[in-house]
Length: 307
Image (cartoon, rainbow, N blue to C red):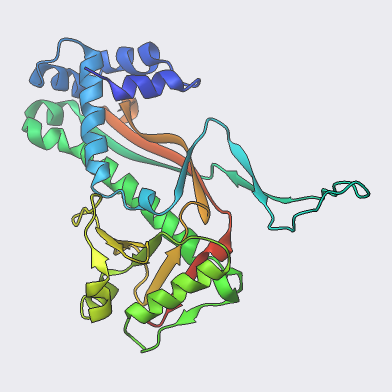
């Protein structure tokens, strides 16, 4: 059976599987109960089981990963070289090839780190029903994934209007209502900048507007990646995946090319590990995540307001 936690730890030069996980788990009352209740043969399996439950819970909130370029890294800073759009040079016998600076540089650092403390007293671990006990770290996974989406939305919503596709925001044709025509206009603004928009991010309030728009209904279809519970509602024939999240700001809608708009550097993806607070006589699980966010090509983002 694959142990995704062990595989992730062994890829990380700052962590040691045997010392940081297995040995600590053997002396941890929470993991001892997981080992016993789960009928696992060794502590490695118990560690992997806790991690799997945390990740499964996180995936229920994993909208953020659908709207940004995810880049795994083991460095504190990554420099992105962004090619400029320039003219081609004709080569002839009397003229050499002229090559100038074709790149701009953007640095993205690992500035986000969050933890969730799921540590309990010895008596609580002994007495509480196991199904209640094992849910606590899962709650942490869900909350951390939600925080990731919040930060990604804050990144997009923080782009200055003058830096967006077309050099400004797009006002909804009808105040207080998002219409198919507004999305088409936003898509075209991104296309005119030379990008291919593939995501449309909407708040639940605006989804109601779209389902009342005949043009949207007739231009919408459910694909293989539809997950209504998570807010992944399918695609339109415009090539846009509709992503619904209440973590977006109401009355705003973003249409963007998720492949180039921004990057999320993932240094430590959601990870559950043995944890204790000796001064408080508590032990259990710490769930953590560490990443960096940065915009790359803001003109691949269009924003509709007043919808």
